[in-house]
Length: 158
Image (cartoon, rainbow, N blue to C red; front, top):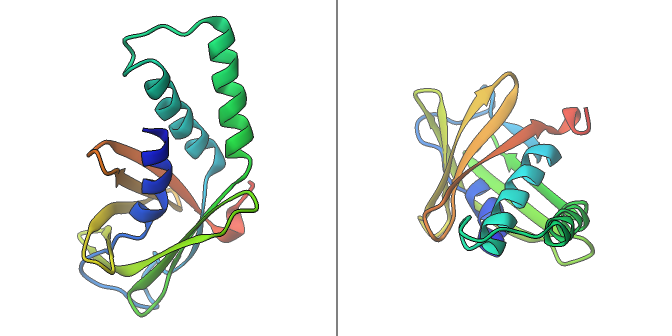
């Protein structure tokens, strides 16, 4: 499931929004994932995978291994989302020195929510602004919902 969520994040970020788009939209710009919110998501996913959905109990050593693995992997992740005034988006995901993955699609806004749709027509995420942050609700290939927080690129690291 960790792999599913890791892959879903950039894809979900690539989902289209419905309603209005354009230069005047507060969604337009470059967004960078909030490391702490994604760390929590990665930890929860890895824990779920290691414990068969919470049915098994981890030993203290397994818990330490899980924490170490998430931190090592997480520190190498770079995920960004660019919403263009044209109503297009580009989601980029890169892990370490690996080749960046790009997902493109369209976005629209309706009733204050931004909806992302990939170029193949697959709806992947819905977002809303909360205190200047873009909060994405993601669904992976297995239908599991998760939330990811994106910061305006100039706020990254604050």
